[in-house]
Image 1 (cartoon, one colour):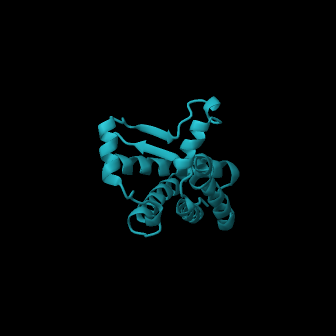
Image 2: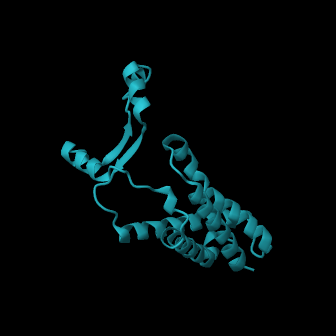
Image 3: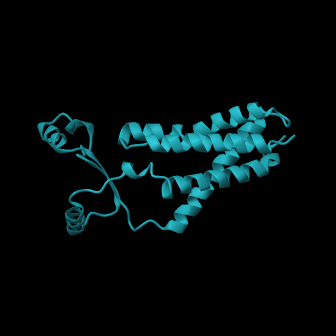
Amino acid sequence: MTVYDLWLPILCTGIATHILSTLAWTVMPHHRPEWNSLPCEDELQDFLAKKGVVPNQYIFPHAGDGSKVNTEEFKNKTAKSVGTLVIWPSPTNMLRSILQTLIYFLVAAFVIGYLASLALPAGAPFIKVFQFVMTAGLLAYVSANFPHVFWFRRRIAMEVLDGVVFALAAGLVFALLWPK
C-alpha cells in the first residue's frame, strides 16, 4: 500500500481539521481569554507610529548580545517589563490566511497518511489505524508548539486542546476510510 491509496482519508482529514480549526477560532469561546487589549492601546499605537517602528519582531529589553545581560542597566529594564512585540506590515489577509491554513492541514494529513502507509497494511483493524493516526496527529497538531512557548511565553492551553481534537478527528477519519 502507498500513501496515494490513502487519498480519500487524507483529503477528508485535511478538510475536517480545517473546519474544526475554523470553528474553534470563530464559534467556540475557549480562545477569547487568550488575547487581551492593552489599557493604553491608542497611546501605544500613536507612540509606535511617531517613532517610526517598522513591522518586525521585537523583544524587550533587548540585550543585543550576552555581555549586556548582567549589567545593572539591563537588570533595571527587566524589572520594568519583559516581553515580545510583533508589528505586522498590514492587517491579516483573511483569504490568504484561510488558504494557508487549509494547505497546512492538507500537508499534515498527507504526512500522517504517509507514516500510516508505512506502518499499517490495508485491512488493518480500526483501532490500530485510529491509535497510530491519532498519535501521529498529536505530534503534528500539538507538540510542535512547545519549544516556541518555552522561549516566547504565550498561552497555548486551548491550542493544545484544539490539537487533541484535530488528532482525534484524524484518527477517526483515517480509521473509518482505511482501505480494506
